[in-house]
Image (tube, rainbow, N blue to C red; front, side, top):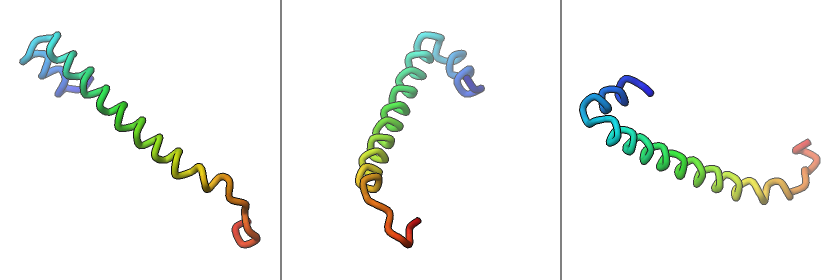
Amino acid sequence: MNKKDIEKIKQEGFDEAIEEMIVEAKQKMMKEIKSLEKIKEISKPHQKRKKTKHMK
């Protein structure tokens, strides 16, 4: 928790601030999961490709 989060808790009340933080964390996780899935899909064909002489 950083200073911004603590200020939110003081202003809005504890429960509301925690709910907001949970929502933000979920959104971040979803973004990270989606980007990881994209990376996984992109890297799949490259793993199957055999190395040519100049790539070794």
